[in-house]
Image (cartoon, rainbow, N blue to C red; front, side, top):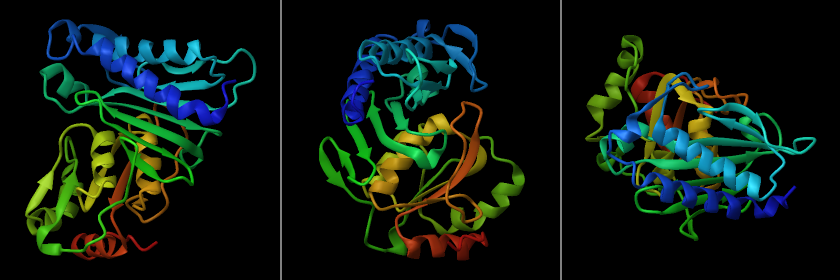
Length: 276
């Protein structure tokens, strides 16, 4: 197997390959061609298929002995013998944006040494429109284009920027979120959770909330580590540490907060039990 410390470099190369191969498809009818149902439960579009194959080609080229957990292909053994880890992939997070030509979509790749979210050791997210790279290795911090990043430190309730995904949310969850939706002057959702969590990790948002229990682990495995290494709090809606099996069908809810003061404010405003 390729030395584990080489993994981030390989992942950046894989993301670059995706960017090169999907750029001509963005916003086209060809990109929208259906290839059946993916392992994650959504229709696989041509742009997804092209992107996923691009990553798999790079992983094979470098002889990465791993088990791939991918949104479209599902679980794929890429090892020549015993798998030495798990690669968790969403080759295009924000597919709808890419299909429409909205310039906000990314490639997300993570490496874990066991089959749990908490075991993620390396994560890379590339903005496929700009080419910007977010990366993290456990214990070494989080980076944006090579520069170290940290979540927002200053607390200013009057200027909160709240990321919130409410697409397809059920009415009961809306009732929970209503108070913070009314209180916050600036609510954002741009259609690619992995990239939005990275923007949060850079300190550009105060929090990001998604309690729909619809997000796949493939969507956020890399961003999970990037947020944690940037000093952010990332928990479940009942205040527990995020933990889930690395499987294309695993779904979860999460709350990301820049610091405990922000988390406490979310809890007080919504009534959610978020004590850590």
